[in-house]
Image (cartoon, rainbow, N blue to C red; front, side, top):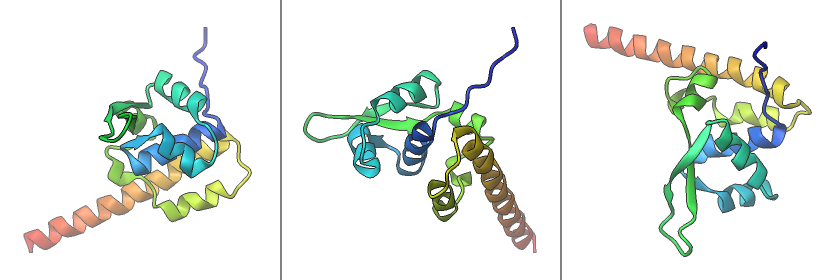
Length: 131
C-alpha cells in the first residue's frame, strides 16, 4: 500500500495557524477569532498529532488550552516557533482562494525564508561576537 498524504482543510489550516501564533489558546478563543465553531478541526488536528492539550485556563469552567506539538514543527520543517512566518505574510493566504494543499505548499516556503533570515541574523551575531 502506498502511503497517502492527506492535506489539511482550509478550516483546519486556519485553526492551526491561530493555535500556532496565539498558543496557549482555548477553543472558545479560536471560535471568537474565526466566527464559527471549530470542534471538528480541533479534533482532526489532535488526531493528526499537530496540536495537543497543554493545560487549562485559570477561569470559570477551566477550558482546555491547546498548543502545537513537536510533530507540527517537523511537519512544517521548523526547529522552533520563532521560525513561523510573519503574520503579515499569512494575511495574503487568508485573503486567497487556495485549497488546503495549495496553502500548505505556500506556507512552507515562507517558513524556509524566515528560517534563512533567522540563520543569517545568528551568523551575523556570531561574527560580531568574534570581532
